[in-house]
Amino acid sequence: MDYGSAIFIDSSVQLLRFIGNSAVKAQIDRTLSGYGFTVTSLVVRQEFKRRFLTDVRYVRDALLKNNRDCGETLRHINRKLGNPANRRKLSISLDVFATGSFKGHAIADAGEQFEMILNNWLDFGLDEFDSTVGHVVKFSGCGCGKLDRIGPKKCTTADNCEVDAFVDRLKTEAKGLREFLKSGTAFPKTKEIIKAEETLDDWLLHGKLPSLTNPCLTVGDLIIALESLGIPAFYTQNARESQHFCCAQEQTMVVHRDTGDETQLAADRKFWPAYT
Image (cartoon, rainbow, N blue to C red; front, side, top):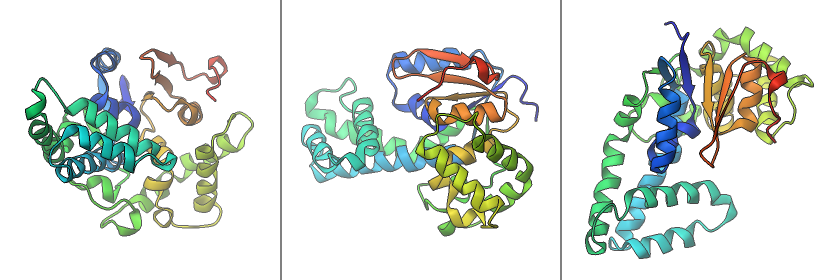
């Protein structure tokens, strides 16, 4: 397949297409309209299930536990997820709540209507995910991502996971990526980038099977970077990690910011700001 005018959409941006506000969604649509083809991957699909649909189910169950009272459900979510360790889950759950509740309904009817919206996401969210992109790259063979339902989160518990063969086919590219990350060019390094380096060492130097490291769960950014090989542009919110992967793979990086602003950076790293 020719990806000459394509852009790869990573997990952070794909999620915003579901829970971002109308201005954010419009900006993303404008950006994507400048490309001939949109692409995402099985691991992005798995992260959509693990982060978004799992939290939709959490909010739905909390709503039912609180007798479809939206106010009590919101208090329940804040109370149960107040620990800093739950920051991401709390953020997504609140975005789900903001996106789905009180959508033009009277407060008295909001709980039942909200439940319908949540159930609709759970039943048809993956169909909508697939329909929002031109192509879902499947050659990583992610066993979790292939499932059309919320399922396992680890390669070691998924059926028919093909990530070992995927990494073996891309061993040359993985070595090049490792060399780049080990070089002085890859700076500043986040803990996620350091983890990616260590994982590549395990695969390439120590002979550890990729599937035993559960990479889709532990180093998702790394696997997604390898899935995006050959696609000239990469669309993300996570510039701190993606700046290194995109530079190593000579991809244009398009960064969406929380403010709604966007920056497009050509593949030549010397002109990039350092995202810290």
